[in-house]
Image (tube, rainbow, N blue to C red):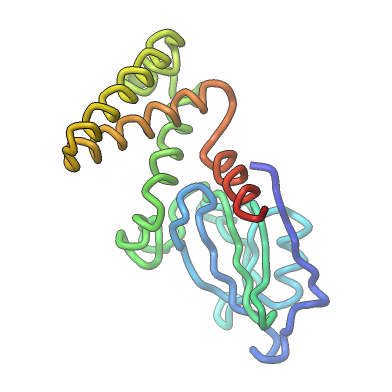
Length: 206
């Protein structure tokens, strides 16, 4: 992802938190909330300079997330809230956020924040060159242009039929299948769910 760091440190209000602001780290691919921590100006400066999240805590002082474990959080975007005393950090995590080994400090319930994001992230994992040895239906689609385009047509036709029949349960299933195959086809030409979101956001702002 291309970083979209829209953050002016001079605009942050560190005084409310006695020198720190609250940072909410969110997986930029899935929307899952990973953790909540604090950062002072020095930590935010290090984050901006390195492109990886740094925090400040009473017990550890200034710390680089993942410096020891390797579970770094690469910055995608940084935005402060309306009061300028909290920062939303959208990141790409290299591993679990929690010291317990869990993906999120809030448990598995936080991981369902964006099911489409989870699906798109899974497709992205399958598309990686180092995943080439993995046998999966997604890999098969990514490697066969005619098959993936054929499947989009089939799933679209099945969705139309289900809707025409007024079969809600089947329409839901077919819609899910169509979205999956559309995301695979989009990934095959270099796109992602974020690209679709950007188009929808632009349309909504008109």
